[in-house]
View 1 (tube, rainbow, N blue to C red):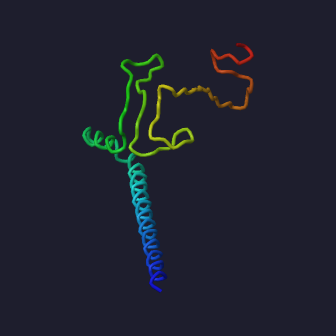
View 2 (cartoon, helix red, strand yellow):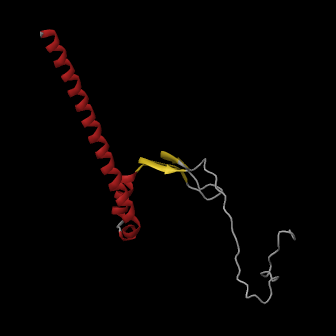
Length: 136
């Protein structure tokens, strides 16, 4: 009878440990959610208030979200000055969740398009000093 009672106490202790572990995990998840929500709300207000910040407030704001920013010693041929940005929390970039963005390895393609509105009288008019793809 005492052996059976001892096993029941061991089972109860195991269940208590599991409950404590799960409670701790739930609290951690809840705390992370609160942090994520506060960051999201902070970013929503960013555009509205950032231009009204003093320089000190702008620096404090950047210190809350950025871990580190690396810059090149000199401006690059393509005009870039930033090497990398390290965030204090994960961000989504290029379809992935990451805490850092390496801009020196990032290649972008830019396009310029000329749009003109035709009045309907002459559909074959081209803007002055522009050539069609066939003429190039």
